[in-house]
Image (cartoon, rainbow, N blue to C red; front, side, top):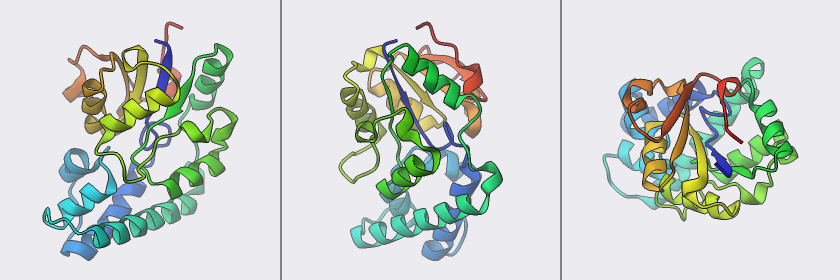
Length: 218
């Protein structure tokens, strides 16, 4: 393992409840009902906003609607984060892991399905630029088809081939994208309760609750 790519939401920051609340508001606006837990885990986690909104809109492409609702959803999400100051922090062990990777000279970055406004929000709120060059962070800027493409770009950004990368993820979509990208070392933060679905994958080396449990051979 020569580099690390972190997912963010549900991995470095436990915010699934905030996303659920925000997507419920969007779903109510688009189709008159909220989202189910099954939809959250199978259709939404780790998926770019426009495809989620397209799904909620009955599968019909509508770029104007997708752009408007994507921005609105993230506005709701950031408001919910700010309102819950007690839980607005990085997951336990994240800072210590970042420090250890920096100490050992292991490059790392973030690949997230979040939009730029959210990434800027996270960098500022959590002072991520103490550890990560924001220019290396990959986010949903409209040019990536899926998370696989994001992982490939993030690996390029830290100049490490994907087969020598460790990806830390929480979603089934993110795990599947990692495998497609050629990642051989995947660690799970099981905030999305996907352990039973991924435990038999040879690429999955650890299933954890916090970053404190992550064990690397550096």
